[in-house]
Image (cartoon, rainbow, N blue to C red):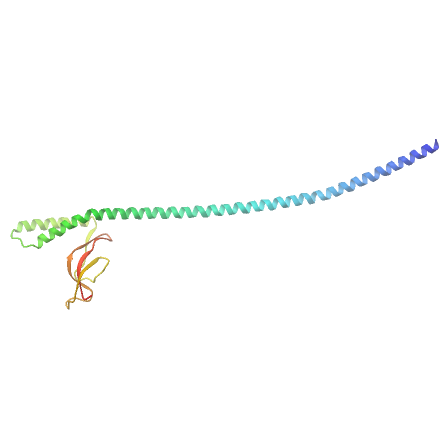
Length: 199
């Protein structure tokens, strides 16, 4: 019986030792777990931070691309608007020039009638009044005669139909006008048909 008590005491001591060892091992495992948890958390946080940084960079690039695209579209629209305005103004000028050109032909004939010798002075003064009124109407439409006689030949506004040598005129000077030219503002609606001296 005394032996059994001794055994059970030893068993108890062993159990205590085993329990103490187990607790020590658990504490060591817990300590390791506690020490690894902050490292893992730090690694996770760093990975998440890297991911967020990459996402921010990607979004910034997208914003820059969108801003660039918006600026390009604005510039394209502004160019389109300006081009449309220019085309509209040019279309108006062309249409007005096309309308006025036949009237200039009528004016040519009236001016030829003035140059003809007529005995009836009342008739001649009537033609003069019509020509004067015609010129006033054209002036209101910003249509003006292109200066030609005794001017230096300019291919932008003059159309040379002949060339002559003449001492009375300077080099490349217009010595005769066959048909008057006209401008509407800066636009030539009919070139002056001229003879150029000493080209």
